[in-house]
Amino acid sequence: MKDQKSIQLPNNDSCAFCAYLSGERPFSFVYKGNMVSILVTREQRGCPHMLVIPNRHVETILDVTEEEAGKLAVAVRDIAKAIESEFKPKGITIWQNNGVPSSQSIAHVHFHVAGTLGTGGTEWGDVPELSLEETEDIADKLRPLFSSYSL
Image (cartoon, rainbow, N blue to C red; front, side, top):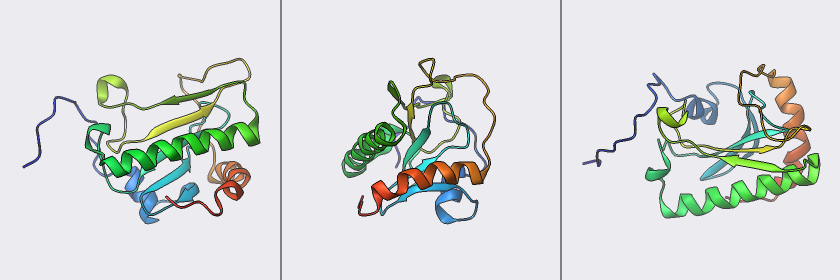
């Protein structure tokens, strides 16, 4: 029996991340591994803004296995290094939300990794959604750094 948690999860009819992973919905991947994937979000809140997710449907950080936690941490570090190498931001912001009160909008654990904007920080308000072509351009800059990656 699953432990009851106090965290209030978003009410998603289906999981967008699982749909991206299965190919049901198109999305730009920098890396798609056995346990962890790195995506270019269409809502660019930084320069650039990436997502690191476990491939298994896991709702919150409280539910990841020890092995997933380790691989997620390595992928977060490595995409931060790739952003620094290719985009040269003045800073890198990393965040992860659990539950509606903390602004989690998709009930599948994910880490945001974003280079800071030219003026500093990241954009927390509404941002325009990039096209798939635009996110593919970002992914194309980063994919070579993950060509021999294995997570």
